[in-house]
Length: 236
Image (cartoon, rainbow, N blue to C red; front, side):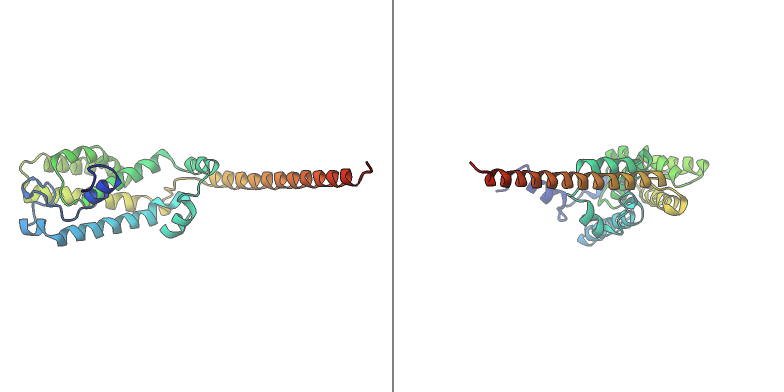
């Protein structure tokens, strides 16, 4: 019998696609029939959609500070290969705005693709939604309208077709806003040109220091070798 806790239990339960949710508690998919809501096809479709949207955001928005070309080069270059100095340089590229964008948009993606949202999950996006809309360049009056619609949808109990559609619609709108409203094309990069220059200078300086140290070690070793040879050749 498997242990109740630990990594195995987390993996098997967190990604348990055979798990069945109660239709009566769903906030986001009330507009579907109960048969569709409980179907494995919906579960796999949402999982595929979740992974796809994450990869799109990662490739086109979140990967920028690493200067990697794609997720594969990112994995080769960064995962498990950072020393402390490199970690500090990478951290300097990440602005608070960038970190907030990534965390809240990632949260919204997870909410959009969740098999079932319950009322307590509203705390995850209640204050994130206006931020993502604002960062996406949505006009303030429209932000208030969208935010109010979301508030009504989540406070409707039991959920109805209209409230569920609004829950899904608002999540789609805020993700579209943050994607179209940010990125290199609009100058919303996570680091600036000066940071890049400083990184390049620090890298060259570190390489130079390592080369000097290697040369000094080689000269010291050569000197010790010559001294040993001289002592060995000296008459006793």
